[in-house]
Length: 125
Image 1: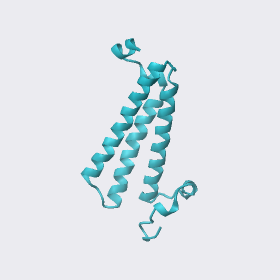
Image 2: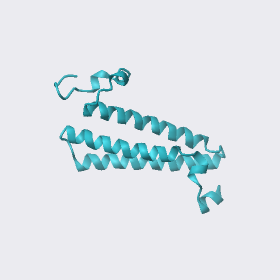
Image 3: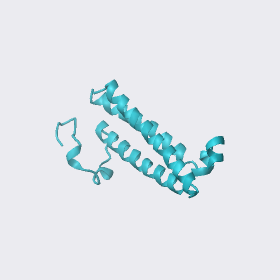
Image 4: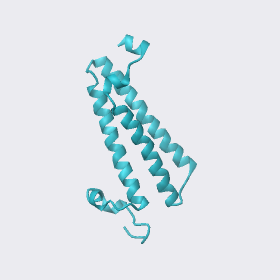
């Protein structure tokens, strides 16, 4: 573990391409969130800043999971699980953003809480 801390680890060797997929999904979620805010006319720098802090926290969580993984010597299992759950979280957020933007994804939205999403065109839930 000390060697990895001093000289770094190759994240791609450790957990594969999942980390890069997570980064792409985070960027995509931020972009869809900005589109959602623009559509709702609620673009706000403090809300955007809070969201960016939350995304930075996710990446810090991956670093923490990697350190735990190295300490327990589980060959990336803990980090892969955490990154997989974060990808699922980001996917749900992206789907919610698409719904609020107005993209017709009713075939997926049947699994979500219908009372949470307002149809902005008609003003109904």
